Image (cartoon, rainbow, N blue to C red; front, side):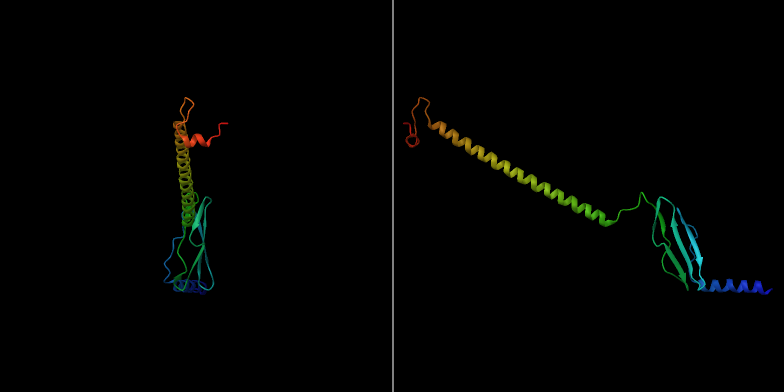
Length: 153
C-alpha cells in the first residue's frame, strides 16, 4: 500500500470516528436544497434553502459535532398555505369581539331611546285626548278649573 492511499484511508477512518453517533440526515430537502460543508475541526455543517414560493420552517443551519446535532432538519412549506401565527387570530378575534359589543350597546341605546320617545308620544297624546274630552264642542267648558284658568276677555 502506498503512502498516499494509507493517508486517505486514515483520514476517512478519522472522519468516521468523529461523526460516529450522529444520525445521518438525507441530503435532500423537498422543494429546496441542502449545502453540506465539513470543517477541519470535524463539524458537519448543513445549510438549507427553499425554492421560490416556499419558506423554510425550522433552522437555516444545523451542524453535528462529536456525535451531537444542534437542531433538526427543517422543511420547506408552501408560502401561500403557510399557517398564520396564532397571535394574529387572537388580535382579530379580540377586535371582532369589541366591534360586536359596541354594536350591541348602540342597538340597546337606540332601542331605549325609541321606547322613551314612544312613551312620551303616548303620554302627550293622552294629555291631548284628556284636554279634548274636557271641551264641549258647543262652546262651553265642562271643566270649571280649566275654563277659569283661560282668560277669555
